[in-house]
Image 1 (spheres, rainbow, N blue to C red):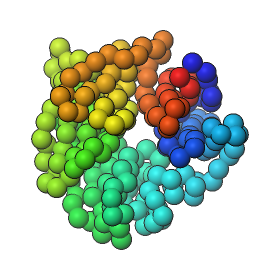
Image 2: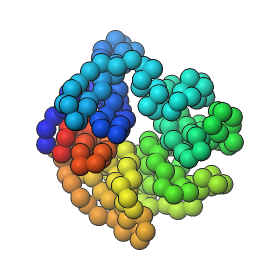
Image 3: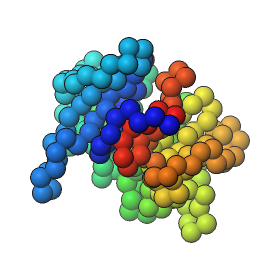
Image 4: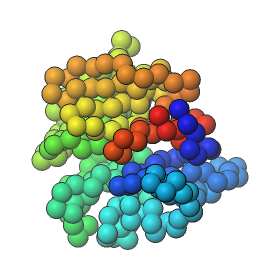
Length: 223
């Protein structure tokens, strides 16, 4: 592994040839100052970027309209869907499905046993959500926003504090912060397999072409 950026990482966004990193630049009491970096894999450059570029990458071209639908544009989760639609969710589980003009098609709350999801990803006509404290993954229909399937949960759950999710083909990569491992779920058979272990909790995984990156406690690493 190679460390590409140190520090307290809030989230990374994938780009066609790199990533955008949202990180804590400074903490004072309960407040955090957040800055943004862009890393280009082809040139190897690391540069400061504005909040506008971060928001454009997260919400799409109409980011100024979409970001008004959430409480915090950094900590929220946004899934860019087809036809310009965006699914947004705040950390308390309050969520909306918005059309390309930011009009609400559905609004509600995603929760499992009083816990809000940590992360969301799309696979086909469904959203997968991770619930960290309950050790469970839940699939929701994008048509009805109803729960369709659950994997894990309970004291014997395969997942230990699952956080970041990433869809790689027909595989769902799950970051288990508790066990410091990456797991894969076959989204055709729902078989679960252990694929990689780290020395620190793993919070996020992304793959861009041949580049695989993870967010650990100490920063962003290239696998």
